[in-house]
Image (cartoon, rainbow, N blue to C red):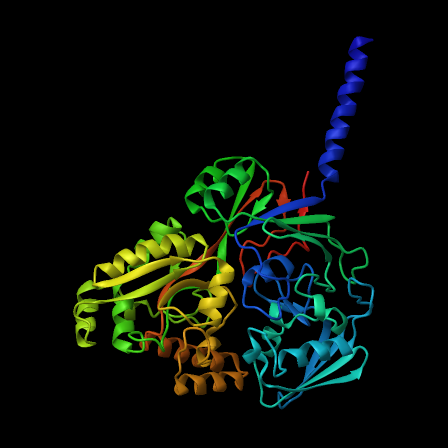
Length: 492
């Protein structure tokens, strides 16, 4: 009898355990940077997209984990033979999280808002060719272009082009209301953001009921929180030196993939002495990329010599133009009138690649006589003083936006590169739709900014995440800066 009771109790316990595992439907995602606000259409901070892209907000098109572009809120589209008119048919039955209907009027509002005179959209230039957005009927939108734009479907997938409702704009930075599989629940600033499953989602519903994004900036704390299983996944894990420990632990899985993050030592091209191309070239030759990859990223990263992802078919290897050469760097400085070097500032935002890489780069620059005074800044401060204010000499940042070489055509962009020839080249790219011809133009663009030594091109940021073993559906690669949870679930 006692044996039978034990058997029954054991069977019940096993069933409860199995039930508990199967019932797990929440997740805690850790990330290093906290968004400055929650409107992806009015800031350059990738941390906003990390939380909200696809989860809360959606665009007409969207990125998949392999980098492909698929329909989003647009179920289909037609392109006129002259490439100047795109007609989008919208998904049916789509509502915003507040219950209001998403229709063509919201699409027109969102796209018109991007190009408005007072627009704060960080990627406004990508949509400059849009001349008119017309409501054909509630489920059909027509976009007219002033000139052909072969990148339009790609650009519409960016977080900067998500569809928002005019009724929610006043509070969007604190209360984001989208159409996604999750809806915003709360934001405890300095700690976490919570989202929950949208029960009225128009598409395939999420498997998870709740997700918490927790912000842990310190690499040591990141390691401790993961090892203690306080968090379920840490995206863009900031302590790559610890990855072997996770790989050896059956409780975890390590996801190593590629990203769109061109990590650069940005130079203020309008501020002396970086307005002198010889000085910029000298800086480029003072940098030992592999030492930075090994020392700051523990070997994770691919050297780059231009602002373009090596995994892209159009990539042209330009690393030979800026190989590490101390003697050449010193000679160039002498030619530029700085035989005894000079002093400058080096602003470093919180990510490990910047803080750790900055220490290494400062030491390398010192070898050629350049004294770089390190200034550690928080992300919001970097956005305000460096990105917006352009008040810097040098800075390190990873540009995680997909295929964003076009920013070099904007002379008002934070590193202030102003080259009419490059601007003409980007205008040509925008009117080119043939894939092979586009690759040729992109190759010319990569070569031009490399030869102008606009910035110190360091490495392509690897996408490194650590997760509990039972999680599936996480993106391994990072075609855009997003933590897409719409396909994530727990296995038994």
